[in-house]
Structures are given as structure tokens and as C-alpha cells.
Length: 332
Image 1 (tube, rainbow, N blue to C red):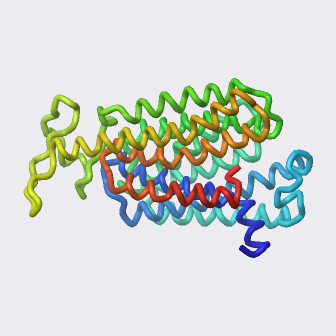
Image 2 (cartoon, rainbow, N blue to C red):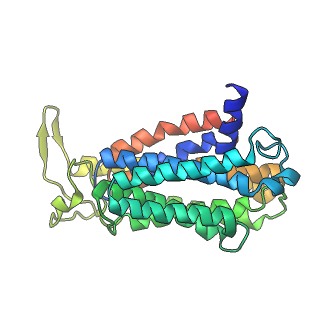
Image 3 (cartoon, rainbow, N blue to C red):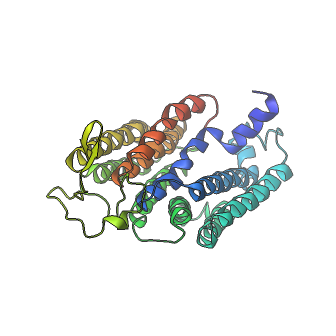
């Protein structure tokens, strides 16, 4: 990678970029639809707004980083402050343009997301409201995907959005001590939140309004009797390979939920535990990185819990890519 490209990759935290598409895809799954063209627009908008936040973050923290992290692109002189601010503004505009192409409801959610990102970086980051603002941004990102996909804001994606927001709140709380360390309570609390979210995500009962792998919205299944295990008993569909639908689908969904929830817990729990036992800056930074990387299996688990195994499988392919890139460019 050329020096200039590496400088911008570091500024924009490209290794964390792979945690972004899953927000919109999990939102589409929660809304009961397969991803469509508007979902793709939402993913593009999310990527732009996320990178805008990264550039704005380092611009706003340039004086602080000059003391605590002089190796960062802006304080080291590798990226000019004006260039970072211009990138933040340009990426925000691009993100909003893409969102509004997906429809006015999606555009309004994206506007709220952009406002939250700018408010966090410029004002709220170092206040008690910081973690809540970051959590709200991630929740809105999932709702952006759901709203763009369906063309309207519905209730089913609210619970997955809350789960993703809770995880983000925990990671952000830990990150507030990553340069000084010395706070064992934050990673310990994050470990508890991760364990609880993993257990809830692995539960067999689907989220209210959960969708299916059927190409049509889940409301088409309204009135279908529910089985004792809580899964909708869809009409049996004959195929060349035999019978599919009903219990086998529910079984595969349950296995995927448990496996992905376990992957989520395993990804975040170990670095959180290490930071709890020794809250030094390096281990605290690793805990933050682990929490960021854990977002992908969490998104995949939420997609599986909503009934879209294809989306869950697609998201799992991003896990090794994000890990590999994190070794070259820090996600924090």
C-alpha cells in the first residue's frame, strides 16, 4: 500500500469498515425482506457516513492526539486537518444523497444518523452522553437499512437495533479509557453485556416480526399457526430434493443462531476479560478492537434470528477479512 493511501486508510479506520454493511443487512432481515437495490443504497450511505465520522473524529481530536497519539495521521503531519474536515463533509453529503435515493423515509433516518455522528464528534464525545450518542448512531444505521429496504419505518427492526446499540454503548464506554487505561469496571461491564446479548440472540424464540428466507415480506405469513417452539409453520414446499420448510428450516436457523452468538461472545469476551484483569492502555485498546470486530458476528446472529440465513452466511465471510486487515491497520 502506498504511503498516502496507507495514511488515509489509517485515518478512516478501513479495517473497521467491514463492520458497517451488516447494519443495513441485519435491518433488512429484521424487516422481513431480502436485500434489494434500496438496501444496497443504504449500505453505501452507511459506509460514507461511517467514514465521515472517522475523518471528523480525528479532526476534532487533533490537539488531544498530538499529546496522546502523535503517530496518528493528522498530528504526525501525514494528513492535513483541512483535508480531513473536507473529507468528512464530502462523505456526509455523499451518504445523504445515497440515502435519499432509497426514498424519503430512508433519507430522514440518514439525516438523523448524520446529525448524531457530527454531534458526537464535535460535542458529545467527551461528555456522559457520548456512549449513548454512539449507540444511537449504530441503532439508526440498522434502522436505515430496514427503512430503505421496505420504504417505511416498521416496528420489527427496533429490537435488533436496540441490541446493536447496547453492544456499541459497551464498546464506547471501554474506549473512553483506551489511552490512559486503569479502569477495570468498563471492560467487566462490557463482558456482562456481551454475554447477555449473546444469550438473548441465541434464544430460539424469534424476534417479534422476524422475517423468513421467503422472497416476500413476512406479513404474507400473517395468520399462519405457530408451532410449540415459536417458529411459524410455513406451508410445506416440495422440491426436487424432497420436502423443505417447517421444522428443518427452524432447526437450521436455531443452529446458526447459537453458532453465531457463540462466535460473537468468543470474539469480544477474551479481550474484555484481559482488560478487566489488567486495564493497561494496550489491553484496553485490544478490548475495544475486539468489541468492534465482534459487531460482524452479532449482525450475522441477528440476521439468522430474523430468519435470513443467506444474509447471515454472507456476513460471516467478512469476519476473516476484517481480522486480517486489522493486523495491518488498527480499527481504533
